[in-house]
Structure formats: structure tokens, C-alpha cells
Image 1 (cartoon, rainbow over the protein chains, first blue to last red):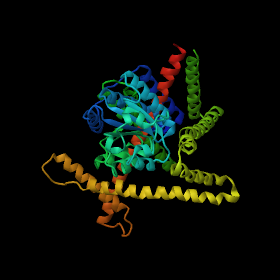
Image 2: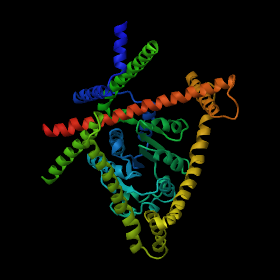
Image 3: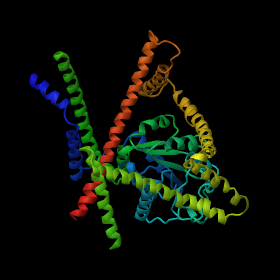
Image 4: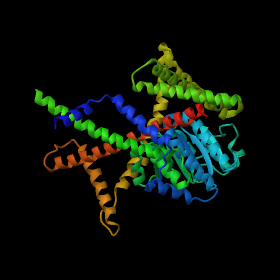
Length: 280
Length: 215
């Protein structure tokens, strides 16, 4: 029994750098061996997928890039999977964003996936870029998009682009997909949905996913694609596995490791406390 | 050839900074400090350039010389406000910046108040008014009971006008249990998010940097 206590005490005092090393090994090995997992998509992701599936060919979908490179591992695979779905369905994509540091990521993904599906800039998709103002931009877009974005990011007036010719405000946009790493998603819900009735699906980092569930429960958004798991779910539904699915095996391994460390840490803490009390 | 070199340079640079930041996990060191300062500086520079090239220049400068009449002269207002904001750098006249700040705060407060009431308070209240009995699946109503109990007891926990004693103490305790479950869920999601970021960087090191070296 003393030996078990000694081991638990040792684990309770273990240098945190050993934990980092374990996490590193548990992350690297499954990745290097390229294990892919087919996950069963969650209900909220399936609902989001089916909502897009039921849109009519040629409908406009607005994608808002509201993240930056710090959230790229979670949201970039999601963006690729969503774009593949949209272009496969022959939907027209309008991309903009509220986070300037993330816009090059959005643009890269848009151009790559558009090329995969032979889509033409200006006819099938457009990149509007960034305007400062956040919620003020969202409100202004409710009356006329041209009041905020008179031209696309390359300076071409919107009326010169066939994809934007009949698009003036939220009434002309079938769906808004916000990819969120902060609170911009809340503002989309507050202004685009509550004020103008815009249908919204939010893809987000896992950190902010719990904050968005009340909107989903209250019917303010059509679906949530949360974190890397959400990205993997969407990749599964689209039928093309990517980095989201590769990450799932690692996620599972690391979660088990962290649970074990939490148990050891807590047990070790209580053993140490009991020994200290006895020695006093 | 040139783009190939640029790509290789970019991959090596990204790998160097990733490893420099990771080195902090062992202990603080000059590589970490260097990477941290470069990150802060380059992000700030990117923001400034992006806003100038894609917003200030086309929307203010170019638009002023392109437009005529009211559309031209109204641009003096945002230009004047931005100059006022910059007076913060001159201590003697920094008080002028308060007018520009007041303008921004006024718009922000107006949008936030209407947005919160119209977009959060009312829809969330509506979302809580759910049927507690009916002919649907039994578990559907169990969920609804949990939802209503969670909202009411959590609200009661933050009601401090009466002393939490007896049955009221039980209600407040139930409220705190719901709050703790919410914190636990949020913490779990945070762990998942941080692991995802690590996966992203390790994936980059393994499949872009190392595969680049051993290609």
C-alpha cells in the first residue's frame, strides 16, 4: 500500500514538462501513421449540411471569415469542406470577413476549391474583402450591400460582376455561413438574423461553441459546426476526408491521456494532502 | 524557380517560429522572445497596411478625388474624426480625441443595446418557453424540464435580494450545479480547441516541413 501511495505521490508532483512530452508523442505518432477515423456526424452538423443540401442551384451563400491564423487548424478544414459542398451544389459564393488577418486564408481556400470545380470568378464566386465597423457593417448590409462594398477587393464595381448583379441585401442571400473564432458570430445573430431574418449557420472554434448552443436551441441559427470535430463531421458528410478527420484519432488519444493525467493529478494531490496532515 | 524558393523559405521560416514558440514549454529563452516580438510586430504591421490599402486609400483618399458634390464633402467628417483620434499622441491637445471616441462609443452603445434586446434577450426568452407536457417523445419533455429548471435556478442563484435559506438554498444550490456543468462543458471544449491547435502545428511540421526536407 505504501508503494502505491509513493507512486501516486510521485505522479502528483511530476514535472509538467513530462506531460508536454507525453502530449507531443501522443499527437505525433497517430499523425505520422496517418490514422483516419470515420466519425458519426453530430445532429447539429447534419442539420447544417441538410440545410445547404436543400438550397436551390444558383442560390447565393455569404461566407464570413471571422478568424485568423491562430484558429486555422480548426476552421480551415471546415471552410474547405463547406466550399466543396457549396460548389458541388452549384451555389454562388460571396466571401467577406471581419478579421483582416484571416482573409488571406479565406481567399486561398476559395481560389483552390473554385479551381477544383472549374468555377469562374465573378460568375460563380466573389471575394469582397474587409470593411471596418463590425456590427455597423452588418446593419448597413441589410439595406444595400453596395453602401458598404461598392466594389470587390480588386476594385471591380459589384454591378460589373454577374454573381452580384441581383444581390442588394440579405433578402437576396439564401444563407449566411459565419466561421467564428470570437464574438462576431453573436453580432451576426443579433443583427443579420434578429433584425433582417437572415438564415445563419455558424462554424466555430471549440472554445466558443458552448456560447453558440443557446442560439441553436432557440432556433436563431440553423446549425453549429463546432471545432475540429465539427470539421471532421462535415468532411464525412461531404465525402472527402481531410485534416479534420486525420485530427480525430489524435483528439481521442489526447483526451484519454488528459483524463488519465487529471485522475492521477487529483489522486496524487489528495494523497499528498493526507500525508502532510498526518506528518503535522 | 523564384516561387519555389519563396515557398521553401516560407516553410522554413514557419517551422523556425513554430519551434521557437514551442521551446517555451521547456523554459523561457531568447528564441521564444524573438518569435513573440516578431509575431506582435508583424501582426500590427499587417493590420496597418491592410486597413490602409483596402480601406483608407480606396474609401477615403481615392473616393474623395473621384466623387463630386455631397458624396465628396461628407468624407471630410470621417477624415476629421480620424485626425481627432490621432491627437492622443500630443498631450497638450489630446482632449480633442474624446469627441472622436464619444462618436465611436455612441454608435457602439446604440448598436449593442438594440442588438442585445432584439437579438438575445427576447429570442432567448422565447426559446425558454417550451412545452413541459405533450404527446411527443418522453425524452423531449425531460430535456425541456431540464432547460426550464436550469434557467430558473441559475437566475435564482444570482438573485441576492432575499437570504438563501431552506428551500431557497436548495434552489440556489441547484443553480450552481447547472453553472458548474456549463463551466465543465466550456473547459472540455477549450481543451479540445487547444489540442486542435497543437494538431495543426504538428501536422505542419510533419507533412510540410519534414516532408519538404526529406522529399
